[in-house]
Image 1 (cartoon, protein in one colour):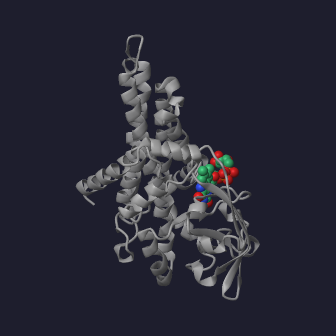
Image 2 (spheres, rainbow, N blue to C red):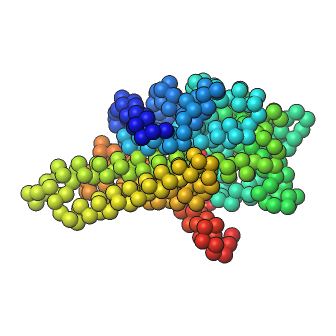
Image 3 (cartoon, helix red, strand yellow):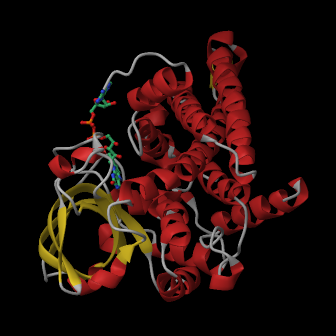
Length: 384
Ligand SMILES: Cc1cc2nc3c(=O)[nH]c(=O)nc-3n(C[C@H](O)[C@H](O)[C@H](O)COP(=O)(O)OP(=O)(O)OC[C@H]3O[C@@H](n4cnc5c(N)ncnc54)[C@H](O)[C@@H]3O)c2cc1C
């Protein structure tokens, strides 16, 4: 995709976001509500189906285009976390789903009649150690019976279907612990009250996150994605795209923070001059800007490798980490630059500061990225 085409997409997203003023996001944040109208507008404009091929009714765009869309959303001060997952989790379906599954779900996701926003991987006891998950799926005739629990399943209350990772073979019976897990498409509207319970978790951000319980929940066998036992690999396959897209969101956040910092530092006068005239105020802003631009280059590199079909694990992880650090540095600098007003809701800084902090914890925490680079890139001894 040419730089001009990417710019057109950015301009379009930016125009759409401008129709949702900051007050809209403040109110949602205050009441912990889902941005239904915003998600509808993004879907209708085709942005949320960016990565769905045209043959399934999507826009069939590149990862760079999807990254540009998410970056622009964040850069406008909005919060795309309400719907970003749909962009990357449908990749599992696209790459590993059967033709029948793709024909059933992808066009409906593309036209907005079906939301695939929920992704059930994390469990309370397993945490980051995904191969220790305890949710089980046992095949009984033409269905699987699912028991267990997930935590931090975001947007479960606002999604029609969920992609779920469960153990189909006990860990003791597989040669490699990463084997024996499978991915299922769960029709949540159908399962609710029939073995599926969703409980919201109130958090420091408006993320619609929940804990989800399965008590003999039945899923038709045809909802198994790909082969039984290969689910962990399918999830891993999607992680590079996920990390690159989250990194792009962080770049958008960082750029929003830095613009706000520059504007406020130029206009706020204390001791008879703009606070931005003091180097003590300028330098942290310049530092955050530099960190952001460096991280943005890594995001671009990761995108280019991914699109060329080259291994991109190293760059995707580094991009996510560097961008998450840059966005928090820019956010913290912005809060500091605003002094007490940074704490006032009406400036949106405190909200964005809370929101961008997430990306050092989810979808993967800082230590795990560092560990990946230490072991898989630098060849240091394995720590776990
Ligand atoms: C708001 C929010 C939304 C989320 N949405 C989803 C979702 O939609 N779907 C989903 O499946 N999950 C989701 N998650 C879960 C998220 O991916 C996990 O919280 C994250 O992967 C960390 O896992 P954990 O919380 O269990 O931390 P733990 O695994 O308990 O780790 C706690 C701390 O210890 C560190 N640590 C653990 N092991 C090691 C080690 N060996 N070496 C060094 N440090 C280590 C970690 O880096 C971390 O800092 C969400 C989380 C949040 C907070």
